[in-house]
Amino acid sequence: MKVVNKYLNVRIYPGKVDKNDNGEKIVTIDEIESNIGIYRFIYNKELEFINHFRQLLIQKGYSDKVMVNDTSCNRVLNMLMQEYPFLKKAESSSRQQSFRDLKIAFKRYKNPNLKSNYPVFKFKKNKNDAFRIMKNGNNLRIQKDKNGFDKILLPKFGLVKFKTSKKYRQILHRASDPNNPTATIKHVTIKKINDKYYAVFNIKIIHIPEKEYGPLMQVGIDIGCSKLAVLSNTQEIANLDLTKETDKIIEYQRKMTQHQPHSIRYNEAKRLYHKWMNKIINKRNDYYDKQTSYIAKNSSFVAVQNENIKAWKSNKYLSHNLQLNAPRIFMDKLEYKCLWNDVCFIKVPMDFPSTQICSKCGEKNPNISGLGNLGIRDWDCLECGKHHDRDVNASKNILQRGLEKIIVGTTVQ
Image (tube, rainbow, N blue to C red):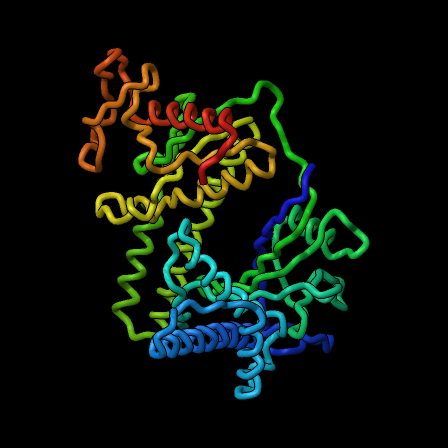
């Protein structure tokens, strides 16, 4: 039993008018779009101020290092609110979250281990528009409207209809009860993805790990491209077949280029394009959730090599398959589920030559290194003569390296 942060993604349906038949205030599409625009506006203005200040420092001969903290960003926000009165229409905590996200972006940029790029401006054409509302007291909760239906109460906006599973609905009711200490809502993120609106709740909840009966396994996992993953016990996790979805996406992308933007036929092609994009995302998330849950429930130790997925995407022969199957999402899901279920999770460094070392004698074979030798799927050890499957051998070496890190008492991220 441990306290974890869970993210519950529910679909919401904002209305076109600000009041329903019972006179209750409801969330409208215009209010959400306005708040998304204000969030983006504040973020860009704060970043513009920081860039201008850095240029002044460079002109005067000083270092361009700028301390981005809550105090300085809050003062800039106060000046913006005096100059632009329409910013007061947004929810107060969402205005503050805009510059806090900017502060996090600068923190990631200054961290040499993350290798993040310098923060850039947000644009209207971004596919994922969002803003965040923090909970203050009991202002963010699930409550019933006058007709007795469950609605989400968003501060300053009102009630909004939502749909989710029975399990998620029960968790939201527990988190909305101020007298229930087992679950608490921390904040909610309102997102617009493919012309659909979602509310992502961050809930602090007591999680009870689920374990299967019987002996637990110790596994090393090799992340690949032709196969999603190969385990050290020779079990393979295949990539999803997304051929039908990708063909439909290409078809409706082509139709969108053949019609005038915002015309009836263009909007219909865009709707179907978004439909098949959502199918890929939902199908992939469901598949990865099932596979990672199985590994986390049946394992006591998991070792994964921290692969450089960005470098793989620069290869034109691998990039399409990597973008479709998104192995980084699989790795992230596996990591947090191991954390929830008290499973020891180790990341082996990416420079470890797991495919070149013989898992039996430890001799290194340099003849299979490099992208040019990816076609070699099995090989014989020059020292002991052992025949190896490339992926299974790599997963065994990853497991052995992970166990060595446990013995030494250090973990490499």
